[in-house]
Image 1: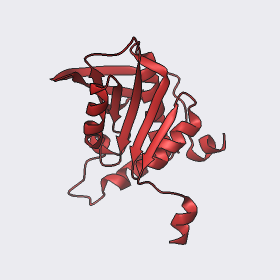
Image 2: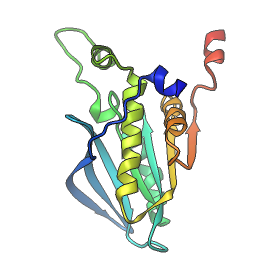
Image 3: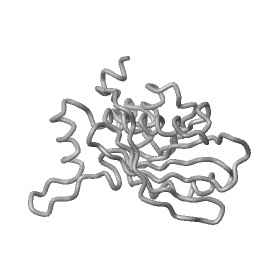
Image 4: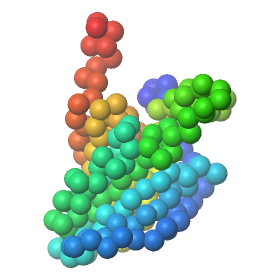
Length: 191
């Protein structure tokens, strides 16, 4: 409850809405282009990697994200799909495709614009992004081909902290894989 309060995380009550934008066929799997409406009026772009052959009715699933954008997840999720696992690459608010456009006239960067949106809502950027990750879990839980007991969150760099926050707040996440991320806030303060 302390993490939820500090991040100011609000769990949306509305049903998750998804929209499909077609798919790309690959040898052994396909990639579905989607958006997830994580909160009313807020859409998060996503790529779903679906294996062609699965070893059973339900497959383990991984949600992957990176501050550099979901394209950094593609190679890992493609390899997992070839092994029969589902993969969902998302761009939480402020990252990748969901980042605010750079304004040439005002000089305000994407990070500043994202911060101001969160600030004006009385929320935090990590809190908004954690909601996006938790709604991605909702999406995988709704799929009959995903094993609801085997959902992993994978993140790299700055996204690692976000993965830990999401797993702290959402018990449906069974495993966290975070690499090259901040080891502790104490370490940061000591630098």
